[in-house]
Image 1 (cartoon, rainbow, N blue to C red):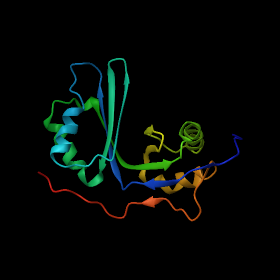
Image 2: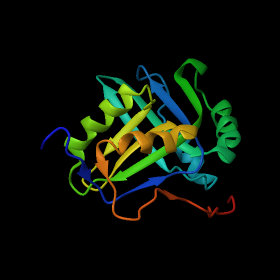
Image 3: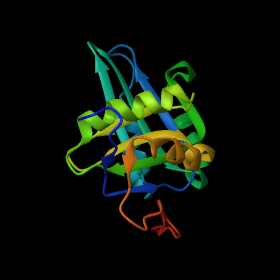
Image 4: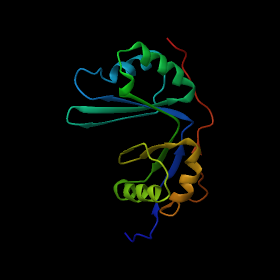
Length: 172
């Protein structure tokens, strides 16, 4: 593929404003992130983004919740045996999901290069055959798409899909 050629994708979706929590487990004596995730499930708190990375015995689990649920997550964390140094919280997160139609590997590098060239943050990234998802600054989502239009081509008449409503289950 010519480097100046744009990659046609199926669409883009934006999340609502989120908060990202990262739970580091630096040794086996640290509690696993599953303790927090289990409590979130018990309280019916939706996790629209979840990924984990691991190097030898060091694991970091990243997850996002709606900004309105962040206070509950903070409370859950304080009730569990986690050290403050092992938890990182980033507020004002947006999840940008692109649907690359099997172009994910080649497109991933072009996207990362484009965002880096414009000093736009990428906190985490996951890819599959059907989607590329990035956590970034919520207030930069429109700017990011504008910059990405240098390397991607959207379907005719497509605007990034924004979630207009959110369904919440009552707590159990």
